Image 1: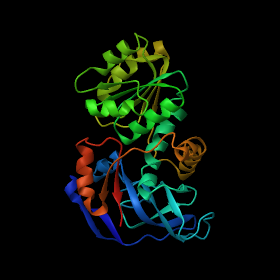
Image 2: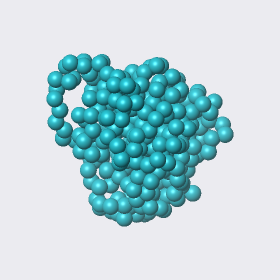
Image 3: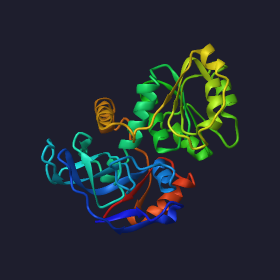
Image 4: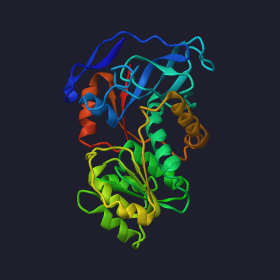
Length: 326
């Protein structure tokens, strides 16, 4: 099969379309002919050599796919050859074929394209777990979502609005803020022009927010904690700005704050299956009904994975960047 391989650690130019041995499905796996794959920030980090490949996973990038079942493992049930499926995987998405555990695979709803399906798993699973399982966001509460124009940001904004929460976001342009309003954002803050900490306190009349979802890490830590209400929850999803931060821990004690971290890729399969089930039960019905949707920015052909990574790292996207496999 053809797949995007990383010839060495480095910039987007190290991604090359090459012949690669096709995978064989294990007893509980499906072999899938990939039609579309999602690109995520973690892919760019792994490409640079800063994210070790988990044991047992392929060196091929790609954590979410949509396609058709080619072969069914001996102990996999509920699927047959030709079925349209989508789901989260541990690696191998940037390829013509990959494998997925049948308990992680989901039938693609009628009327969805492969691109629509591939845009869902990583961002919806992440937003669901961070905002609701950890953050326990509920109706009437207020949340600040950093990187509001990202795939997770556009998804989380819709989810939070859908349950009746008040949503603030940060983004790097007026255009992204305006588009976020159409998804349910109450107000957006251009982090390039304003201090989000001061802006949030003004927008909430000094009260702050119950939940902060953060992708930046160290540079935002002190301000994130400062804008949380008593018993507030900070959920750290990424460390794009660095991992080493210093804070006054007294604020955590005085305000009885909670800090959570979330990385899905390294979780045991059983935990990922539970995450999939929570998504299916709570959010997939709303996706089917069109009440929320995956926001797709751009679709690149598989051969242009290099250009797709360049596009992501330039922060040009609003929503998901995808690869289409012909």
